[in-house]
Image 1 (cartoon, rainbow, N blue to C red):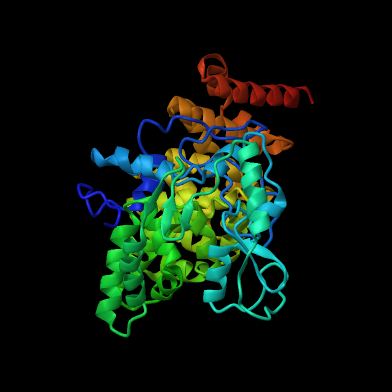
Image 2 (cartoon, rainbow, N blue to C red; image 1 turned 90 degrees about the horizontal axis):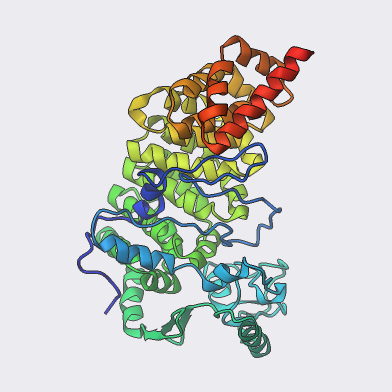
Length: 479
């Protein structure tokens, strides 16, 4: 039987898995990063440094801190366990100290290969990724861009053996996935899923049916299956569902479009599927849904962009796609959940330096200032976190000051919660570094008294930030 949890409410979407626990609740207690501090992000994922990009290398999850299912029933714990194990075990271990040899990584996904195959150009790829590439209508080698003389995939047994030996030597579990009709789990056990696959393949076939009702029903069923387990996410992607789901993103039927974008969101939770989604050229259609879809579709489109943007190279692609203005619009005008989805995606995208200017030009500073001053949104933490990422960017810094944000931040120094005070101090420090005009503004607006209070009684990090600003102010007075 297809893996599911019959007691789980059908309406509990993976959307919540990505976002709700990340942006709400008492667990959101950590601080933002600036001034050479490695911040601990309670609301958003941690910074990951961008080391360049390659348009052929998609799907690598640098910060795979995908969040947990929303805690609204006892089933949440089971789902949390399921999602936490969806992370490739190799990824968990390789970050400690062991570097995986480049030749063992699929050029498409940058993941350790479990079933390496050779194409006619002599390049080796993970079978599932190159097969999806070919099935999407491509007849070139992704790495070399040379035309493939034929579409034969030849198993690279020598490399597979070397990978196995290397994993054994370093005590690293080999990748899990679908092989010969079985899903291999990280604990070494396997589950026969051949009967499940036949059911899913039939549903995938209906995604391309000429009948609107068949497409609609198939998308709804796949949506339900895709949120229930990692096994289902693997099977649905292996069955080739992603390209037809991307096609359905442009459906004129609202429900079909909502189901399609939510399916892609759910599938993106499994790390290996991220590359397949990018290969299917899903981003332009997801952005279009973000612009003109129903509110539910827009929420889930934003959550999908967040999930995909966890890979650094995808931040660049998504930022260049026109997604940022649409996300800023959702941040300003969306539902409560839509605003949180947009904030999370924007934070992650703005970690990449090239996206900061895009966000500023899209009007993000005005939207963030409104979040800081409108208590009804309950999004002060999110606004401060995004501002902390932007404050070191020169264009953003100028826009923050021009929008009269400094008085609002000083007010938070006086009246905010301890975490808000700390974060406001961190942003002000970034704004005042090497800027005597902003420092003088702080002095004129009476920031010294609340900063002195934070320096004495604030959080440890808040004290450090406040003391740094006060030291800059003392030096300014000596000039």
